[in-house]
Length: 324
Image (tube, rainbow, N blue to C red):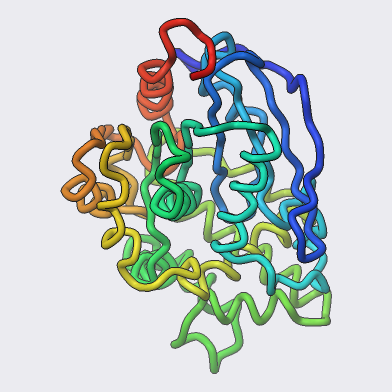
């Protein structure tokens, strides 16, 4: 945790009615007169934990965090199997980001995203480039159908025993098909035991395919049954629909990012989200700098990845510490 900033608490928070019966939790911390920045958390379904606040200099930034639709503090809770996810798509989330920006009176902001949050950040920035001052992205993914297949099927070549358990948790007739789809169906089953088994096995596999560094520790959030259900429902919902994006759309649309400075940080040992996605994007988005971290994997799995993300937010700090 070498370069991480001290913990800070929000000075403002609220719940924003975004329509469709959804209410989105948001919070702001740091310097009220600082440079605006918004965090797009991963998952989908992880929620915006307090550690995200520590990736920014709180004296320089006005840091906005929010839980995406269905993520517990944002209601209705996707952990309730009867909560409809029909109005929970990438387009809806992009609309929520814009509603929150206007609600807070922000003209443009730095957008920071990790993993699924990268997919959302790219989709948002390509649709609203004038509202994005910079992009800081780590564990770069585009949630394509090929990437989903890689994680849910091809990773079985690396972790065969664990993957066999993951596959065999679904009914025999579904084992050769789309496993994200099969799990989504189980997570919508009226039988609580079916739902709980699906959530438990999905999250067990999640913990396996990111475990590519020696000091990996299981994610303690997966011990919470409600978090498991919420997380698994949202991930499988978005993955079964390939992020609600057309194939190759983010790479084809990367020309819209011209003029937006960016940094992409990615671990070379991130085998659940291989570096080729970030590399391909860097060939098109020439205003971005790609930083590859040796011997580190997915997420903020080590000090070097985390320090590179913080170095990027530090580099984009305003000279005066006031909003532009």
